[in-house]
Length: 153
Image 1 (cartoon, rainbow, N blue to C red):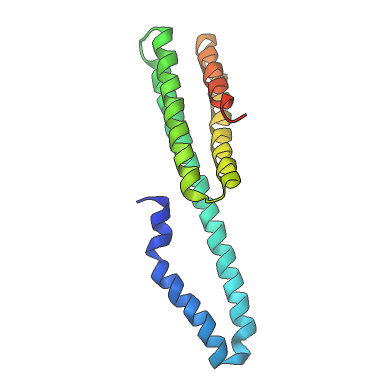
Image 2: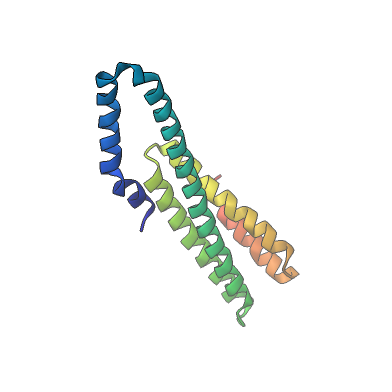
């Protein structure tokens, strides 16, 4: 199930509630203030849950990327192979993050902000991982972090 599928499945329900919200105040005029308040609360809850879902999806992508990087660093391979494997994981992350940002946002600036939020989460995770590894792996993580930051500048 994709993120946009969550909203699509409730489209009929949302349309029905919208129609009810338009018709009900005309039938019972003294319900307008209560209905207006209920709609405001409903919209704010919807926006909040959407933001939470986005944050969870970002965290999921970041966690999967960090685990893949950790796996690449722990494999018995030479340093060049490890660097290449980490770079591939970063490229995969960038493709997924860009794709998600485009899917979630229609505005170009907001897409860029959404992509940057995802990159910032991964950067933070890389900094945390760097603290827990030896000097050779720290250098590879530093290079991955620089590679990740280069294109969003």
